[in-house]
Image (cartoon, rainbow over all chains, first blue to last red; front, side):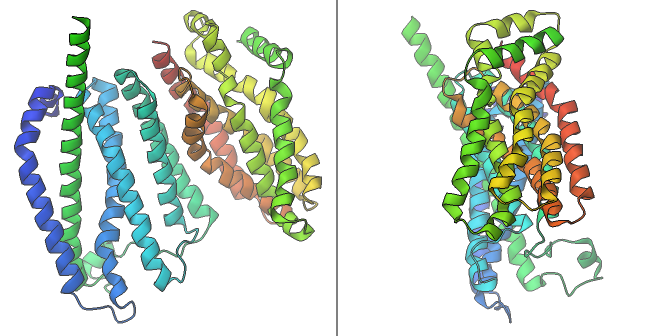
Length: 249
Length: 218
């Protein structure tokens, strides 16, 4: 059991076929539980009212937006170092999902920000960084689409992913320097909150449990979508190869 | 390497058009801005450093596809790749040539255009310094973008999409130096960061550009 076994597309498809129903069902259960619990069975915040409930979409989506990029970075590294074909395809499959998560994070943030901050958009560091991250996703996907040869595209995009990661990190600190924030700091998971040192700042457990469930749901959803899209891409390539062989025969 | 540099410079100057085009673009952008935002001098004073930086950045971006495109078309890029010069060296020289033909004129002209936008007194010096420090980074990052898209038919738009997000940190610190300089504030922190970015990308990014170019020439 190592990831190198799954460089064999047939083996990958077989395993993915086996895993996919389970992961999908688990994702649906977690998402439905987390969201329904969060939306209907938690008290309203005494200051934010019912708008606080958008946290169950906003926080997990924002988390997955970053994690999807990190996953792409790892997959790209694996491709560059070991020419693991399925890994390159998985990176490609993750990009549109990550971009969608970024959009969900931005849009839900705007919907929450309108009543709370009184504005749809502010040039706050966190918001700005997410917008820049979205641009990186766009560039990455556009490069995949633009290059015809598959291996060249995989090579170029993975190097772009590496360079882009460095610049995304640089942008993050540059943007923090550039403007002070309106967005609150992390209040879901923080060291002081776990040890009980600053309970005032932490999200209350009433909100935290459904948030945790819906967060797990988003992770599972991401895994399911990546598996599905990677499978689709492998099959599309195979059918393309078959067609090419038939035409030349 | 010096031979390659002089060749690139000579081509840029003599082979018509390329040399002055970036400058003309910079001039036009600067002239258009007051039409867009209105002629109030205090408003222009406020936005002048940022506008000049963005103008220089766009002028730089527009000339990027010339770095490799011509050499790619007539095959001299393949010759260069087989020459006894490491690819990293070629890429660095190309970036340097691009900076001398595009970045340096922009730096020299920017203070003159600052007059049009009513730039504040101390701003001229700091605009000049920040552009002089920042435009090399723009050239080096742009060379990476040009290397990524060298073989593509319609690479221009795609290259803008790839390169512009990479320009964000340089633009932030560069414009910050110019703005603070114009307002008479302390500029040391953003200036050091800008210099750090310039030297950092000049040292490291040619390796990525060379790797990308090798893949594209495969």
